[in-house]
Amino acid sequence: MTLPLVTLTPAGPSAARRQVLARRVRLLVAATITYNVIEAAVAITAGTMASSTALIGFGLDSVIEVSSAAAVAWQFAAPDPQAREKVALRVIAVSFFALAAYVSIESVRALVGGADAEHSSIGLVLAALSLAIMPVLSYAQRRAGWELGSRSAVADSKQTLLCTYLSAVLLVGLGVNSLFGWSWADPIAALVIAAVAVKEGREAWRGDACCAVPLTAPRTGTDTAAGESAAGGDDACGCRPGCSCCSADAT
Image 1 (tube, rainbow, N blue to C red):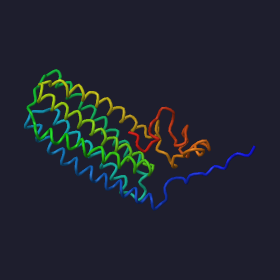
Image 2: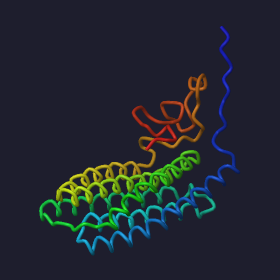
Image 3: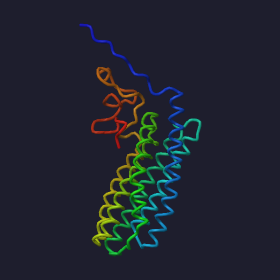
């Protein structure tokens, strides 16, 4: 029996395409850093004025995100970004852990101390603005990093996506507290975010322990049965069973 011919996909993007993607990542990282510096200054100032632990924590989260984005910017400033990827991943992982530790401690303190934050219109506007901007930056960087095969760029995009979750938590927490006086809602939700941060930090620290960014473009149709990818995974794009990283849209 004659088997059908299989068309193999090229092993990753061309050199010209890689330059375009690397430049795109640098621009997205620069935009993320700029926005987070402004966000941190506004959130910490507004949080201090309103005695809001959630707002201050949100501002400090922005500072941590700047360190994560700066690590990726440092990586892609090198002639060979891949040579710096392991160090960049470690910095991103530590950023996740630091964020989880701070959010956990402040959430427990807010629950035990029962401190009541005042209404903050600035905080509500900032949270809503971040909720609209952060997903766009995260999605664009994740797609570029995924196509480029950069685990650090994908990991940093998750850090940005985590800011989206924190923005939603902050918006709900400030809104519920302003409307109903339920000051416990925000720290409870923030503890969930801290658990997510720990999970993402572990994945960044391991690098390619679970979901490896594919070194080749994903195959479709009959190409899927042609064999394993260059990343050595269990399916066409190099991911192990149960991982969701194979899709460019995966979080």
